[in-house]
Image (cartoon, rainbow, N blue to C red; front, side, top):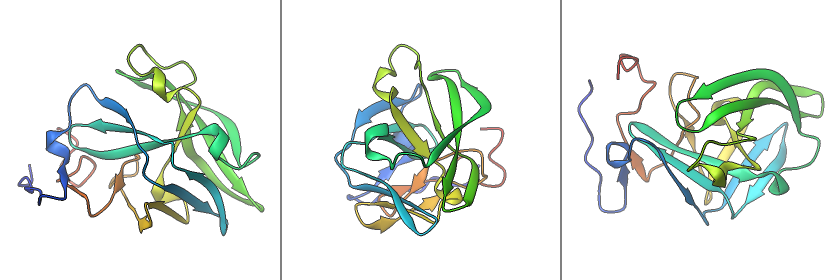
Amino acid sequence: MKKRVHPDPNQESVWDYPRPPRVERSDRHVQVVYGGRMIADSHRAIRVLETSHPPVYYIPLTDIVPGTLVPTSTRTSCEYKGIAQYFDVSVGGRVAEAAAWHYPSPAPGYELLRDHVAFYPGRMDACYLSGEQVSPQPGGFYGGWITNAVVGPFKGEPGTMGW
């Protein structure tokens, strides 16, 4: 395993996040851009914090531009949160396949996620957290948002599949 990075006073370490994951409200400004258009803009996101993962931000459906999310048949299962259903993101003829997901019936303890959607930042044009453009969590499977306020190493980097 890569050496753990110790956070500065204004940072969080993903190694201090709990398992099972913690769900909490966030008043940070969360924005998602795709197809040259702002498709999500919120100060009412929910963030999920899980050991070794950067935070994942879930945006209320009411803060997402109607018509940009197209349901797919893709499903995955999280041992904690339940069954996730995926959306393609479609704007102006551009489609990002399975680029967003939600938990329509979240497991007990994760009810705050109902009616909220998470986006893979690496599949969007850009995602912002309080004005800072985020970097996607490595590996393509996970949807964490990396900012200057969070340090790793992060699950998804080469050599981390056994974590």
